[in-house]
Each structure stands twice: as C-alpha cells, then as structure tokens.
Image (tube, rainbow, N blue to C red; front, side, top):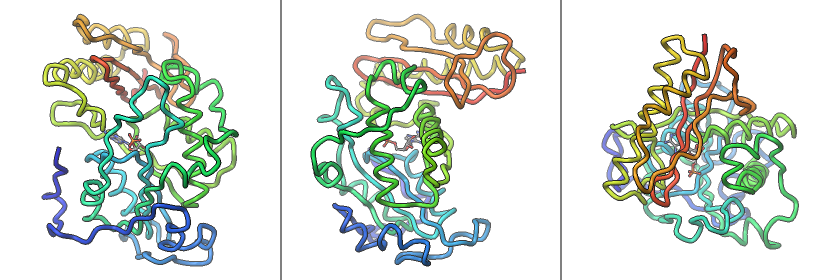
Length: 317
Ligand code: AMP
C-alpha cells in the first residue's frame, strides 16, 4: 500500500528525517530531554500563526506501518509545535502470547519516506534492548478498572504494556504535547487518565479517526484482510454509523446499541462480534437507558484472525 503524498505538495525526493535508534542518539539530534525548558532545541521552527507562539515539543507515538491516519497526527503536531518527534516502536510488552508481534508489519524505509514531506525533527525508532535494557520492565503501569474492560478484557495485559511504554517514551522525549488518535479510544482515555493521575505534565491532544473512502477506519492491520474479509469488515463502520444516526434521532443508549447491533447484520462464518456498547467516554463504564450527554459508541469485530475496532462520539438527548 503506497502512501499518497501528492496532496502534500511534497517534492518526490524530500530529505528523510534523521533517525535515532537509541535514547542517546535521540538526545544528540533534539537535545537532552530536560533541556527543553531552557529554549528552543535544534530542529525548532515557529509553528503556524494560529498555533500557540511558545516553542513546544510534540511527540507522535506509533508502531510504524504508517498510513494517512498516523500522518494526520503528524500534521496536527507540526501545526501545533515547533519541534516534532515521531516514535516508531513495536512494543513487545503490549502483545499477548497469541498475538501478531512477530508478524506485525515493519518497514522503516517506507515509514521514513512517508514522513519526509513533514517537518519532523527526529524519528525515534529504538531497538527493544534500548527501550528495555534489563529485559521486560518489571515495574509496570496498572491501568486500573478501565484497563480491564472491553479491549482490556479481551487482551489481558495489553494496556499495562501500552501505558508502560507510553510513560517511558514520554520520559525519554519530554514533550509539551503528545497526540493520540481517537481510533484507539480506550487507549486515549487511559492515557488521559494516566497523565492526570500521575501528574505527568503533558497535554494530550486527540486527533479524529481517519477512514478509507468506504468508511473503514484506517489501521496497519487492515492489510491482513483478504478481499472478502475487507468487505465483511465494513459491517463495523456501518453499525457505528447506524448507532450514531439513532442517537441523532433522539434514541437513548439502549436503543443506540440495539440499532448498531441490528445494522451489523448476520455474522457470516469467520466473523464474530467482541462487543458493541455505549459507554462514558472518560471511564468506559456502560451507560444506562437514562443517561444523557456525551457518550461513546464502541465496537470490536473479528474477521478471520483480524480484530477491528471502531467508535463514534454521541450526544444522548
Ligand atoms: P499504532 O501505530 O496503531 O499504535 O497507532 C499510533 C497512533 O496513531 C495511535 O494514537 C492511534 O490511535 C493513531 N491512529 C491509528 N490509526 C488511526 C486512524 N485511522 N485515525 C486516527 N488515528 C489513528
């Protein structure tokens, strides 16, 4: 899958961003983490006019296999901050034993080419031994009750692993802002809660979900889908849309969920629904029929061995 750069106005051969394979290399490129308060670090330029004027460092954390959804985070980072660091790290700690850690797509050369059009000060693509020099981290972030429901129930240990590496990457990059996609809504809510509960002093900036033309949320894992599975996968965004339309028409949480489930249609062989639920966007506690105000409709569908997640923000009347 080629990243479409035509709309970016990028010269085909734009220079690749510098790559750091270790924390020491990163410091050599962008300055020591805690030097930021003293003034602009190298690679800093003034961000766009409507962005805050103070020089700010932004970090975008990814596992690579970059697509336009990731690039939306980078675009927003460039708009808001003078210095942008993109991290690329497939974190073994957040993969379960039966998950796709070894098979997860890795192509640093292609990712660097995708980032070339953007003003990225450094790509931090560390090795596993740079991030975990003493083997797997023994001390890990406990995601609490929100980490044990939905994605956390299906992927035990996933959020502890994800939050642990996010905390480490925040410590290593010391950004003023960190951008996360709404596609991974539960991760976003947990990161916001971690930053608040642990006083991490970084602003978390959510970025909207980027979708394919037919509505499927972009994901590095979509490439695992066969043509037939790709068509089956569309049941998920269709269901989320149906739930959203029901909420707009005044339905409560129970009816929204029922409409979304109905729109999924019958599960064909190889498909199964992990969950479809209306939750509080901050705590991921399911909302009862009387709930009003901000809500999130979340869904996860299995198609073959690929799991797809999706969600939409709702306002319940
Ligand atoms: P990943 O590489 O899957 O760990 O994702 C890295 C970041 O990109 C996370 O903050 C994701 O939520 C975000 N992201 C991934 N896919 C999308 C998408 N389709 N739209 C918006 N953000 C996304």
